[in-house]
Image (cartoon, rainbow, N blue to C red; front, side, top):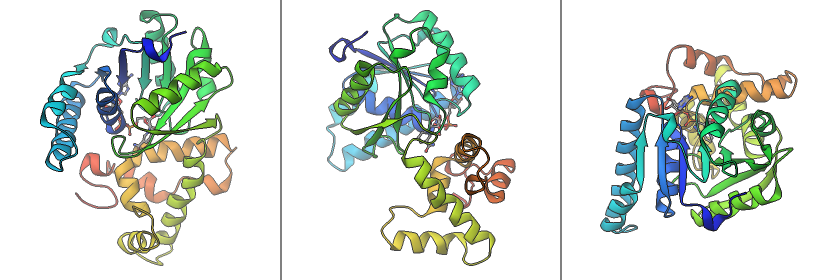
Length: 285
Ligand SMILES: NC(=O)c1ccc[n+]([C@@H]2O[C@H](COP(=O)([O-])OP(=O)(O)OC[C@H]3O[C@@H](n4cnc5c(N)ncnc54)[C@H](O)[C@@H]3O)[C@@H](O)[C@H]2O)c1
């Protein structure tokens, strides 16, 4: 299996909300970074987002202009799955198990047999994602938080077959990227998303019952010290992704009523109001 000192290239799959940020973090950590997406438009959007983030860091005096250029030069944007070759693969594509296992299947064929596979899934079973891969001992969860460049926390998920060296490598890699990793076990939603589910679901129930509107609920929760209110946060996450996570926990906990997806989020997804990424969600942007 590959060791941390052998890691030179990190292939990040999926250039959406999370993948773009993870690629920025990997390149800032000094790694040659490949950012792959099947939609070329998402690659253009990711490049613009990363450039904007780095420009903001330069203007705040947190990054030298020369370092900004070096970070951007370390990222190669590609729409070709064949280019996803590296010592570490970090997957941040759609929150659907069949799509993730299909991609990992394709990538095992073209990568070194010791390459490490990490998934950024928020809620799916890492053990199930790993099951379809040759040598599942090299698969772990590497769950970044949104926005990935700003949020320090990374849940490092040990699945059923994850080798201790794999979990350690992902942990150390997160440290090298300037993050604060925490080891967790593979369970639905791991720790943070399982607990945080009720932040979103209960807030939507409050709104449905007409007790307060979205903005007031957000103001109230922010007033108690939460960095973002639940509706602003759901719009940042993406209502489609957040609904997929709710659905996945609901299924994993055998349709436990406390995880029932809420009609407000279902409706937003049906209307294409996905949040910030589509310009409209609970709020208009
Ligand atoms: N949004 C969040 O706040 C958040 C936080 C932590 C983890 N996650 C997890 O990260 C993953 C990605 O979420 P996101 O919010 O970035 O989603 P997103 O919808 O913003 O982006 C997903 C990207 O994956 C691409 N894609 C889909 N199938 C692909 C494939 N087969 N090959 C290559 N690219 C493909 C899409 O074109 C899209 O650009 C999910 O598993 C999600 O649960 C999301």
